[in-house]
Image 1 (cartoon, one colour):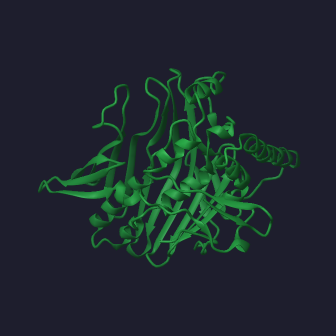
Image 2 (cartoon, one colour):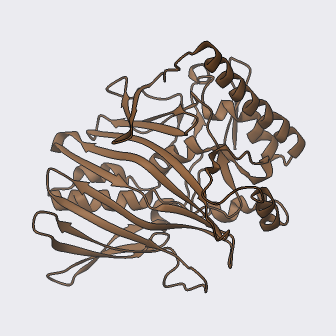
Length: 387
């Protein structure tokens, strides 16, 4: 944990990123009788309901915002997989690297715990080496998060605009979170644009409690015609190590529907590709290599930290959760949530249209949410991850 006193008098509290060890280390935040408590929260929730408005007690929170979790999936990684995407000598080499990097963004989560719902206008700005990452919560209801990351040295531009939609299913056995929106990675010096979709997050209560990433995901590059289809699988009833957190798929040329590589493995262990012509297998992703020993970000320039920074907005709540001071955490969290509701009421009464600071946003039924950064490059951040 790293705590810094900022000029505006609020503590910025940064916590360790989610990692392969994160699921175990986060267990200290678990509340007793977790399944019964979760089910009691959902007693009055109707099947198919939008759960974004459900307010969780702090005992169910990890000490970080969902905005930070999105950012961590980009800047918290041991190996520099993102820069490797731009270094591949051929379009196929680069595409395989992008597929591997997209898999690295899937992180283990602990059952019964969730990050905070970001407030409107909340931001998160972190740098790692030459990679600068900036996020902003551009809508609260529905929740929409925008991410822009640039790396001038490696000619990389990354843009996300996404909105999670959690649903409580009629069987009462699980919650499924669909992530709507787009993820776009540009390799500027190669004139290649990659679009990606993530799998769904499934929180299962019965018969065996757990959190899984399940369903289909895609990676596409329009310029080269290469595509990847990925299927994330998990246990349904009986635990099966061969299926748990497994991933299968293929890389193919869309114009000819010709499969180039078959993808197999487990996203929390290793993933390989097999050349369909030669049968040669190559490891393209090692979770242990990528997600162990991750470092907590630190505040390098306290005076430059914005009051909207996630680590500041939720700083008091973070500190209370880490100290297990649940009454204090509940009071601080309630204050933030009530302030958010008050701002929404004032905005409605004045008929004001709130505008994001770092992005321009549009929405339509046909194309969904679209976010464009207000600046071409993301500046270096006052919060950094040291290599």
